[in-house]
Amino acid sequence: MNVFDWLSHMDVPTGQRFDVVEVKFKGGRKEYFRNINQLEFITGDYVVCEMASGQHIGTVSLQGELVRLQMKRKNVVFSDDMHVIYRVASEKDLDKHTQAMAREMPTLYRTREIIREMKLNMKLSDVEFQSDNTKTTFYYSSEERVDFRELIKSLASEFKVRIEMRQISLRQEASRLGGLGSCGRELCCSTWLTDFKNISTSAARYQNLSLNPAKLSGQCGRLKCCLNYELETYIDALRDIPTVDAPLKTKKGIATLQKTDIFKRIMWFGFDKDTNWYPVAIDKVLQIIDLNKKDIIPESLEILTPEPEKSLERGANKLNSDLENLDKKYSEEQKKKKKKKKNRSGQNKNNPNAQGKPQAAAPNQPAGK
Image 1 (cartoon, rainbow, N blue to C red):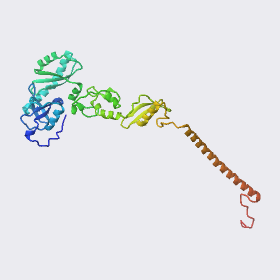
Image 2: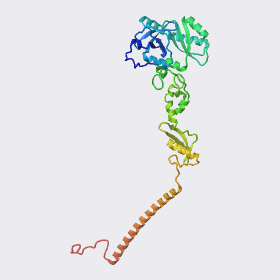
Image 3: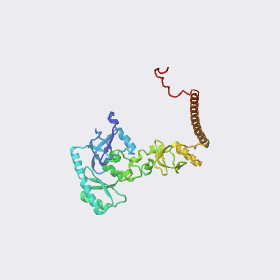
Image 4: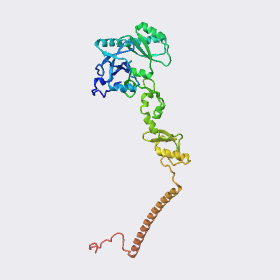
């Protein structure tokens, strides 16, 4: 709920300043008050504000021209009937405020006991005392209408203050109590989120999330607000992705859609009795769907057009021609070997003394003479 005043360094004349200040109270509640006395504030100052009954102390969260923009965004009308800021809180005011805050937890526990004794179907989540101890606001949540007239009488007689019962939703309850989300950060509703929109399970379906209530639910027990953050981006990306109503038919088998990668534009299909998934681009998926509508069954997910029979015959002839070339090669080599053998045998017949080994030299003569 913290805000950054990016106009704080600009010096605006006193007469032109916007005299409405945004003040923050317990639980992140913010209201707007007029600064009729033209007091100088610093963000974080404790101020005493006018309430419908009495006074209350809050902290200055925003001032200047940004307050005008915030009021316009939240549809708050500026009028002379708006409550005003009396003064900057003194030490005596802060002491009273601290004593009022110290009464909140004992009052919360005691009120829960009274609710259990009256057997009322309501969950009390928070108690807020006004700084002057004249009014107490009880925040509760319930799924049905609760008759708490007797409860108000018993609380007023016990705590001697004016009682106000305010029903809040479960999301508002989580924003007041605060906590950490599954992402490891503080809850969005307790830090910066102020508008709670309806969230349906279709938001999880668009983003291909598993419909597991334990993972999709926040601390309030409702669907997480962050499911809506990227929903528009996913919807824009899904416009070009086809809806596969029936499995794709191929000669390899029937392919069933298993998963879709929306941003990479890839769809994963799996065949029956096959544990592997095969990625297919969206363009090819559209082509296969069109072929199946025309009763044409492609070879597989990758090869869309079946090979014609002529190409198969050519492939077979090509294979046979390779075999024939190998046979010719080996037959020619065998013929050459036979010719060499014949030539050697003819030379041996004409020269009977010619042997494969050289003749031994005669005694008392050198070899070769």
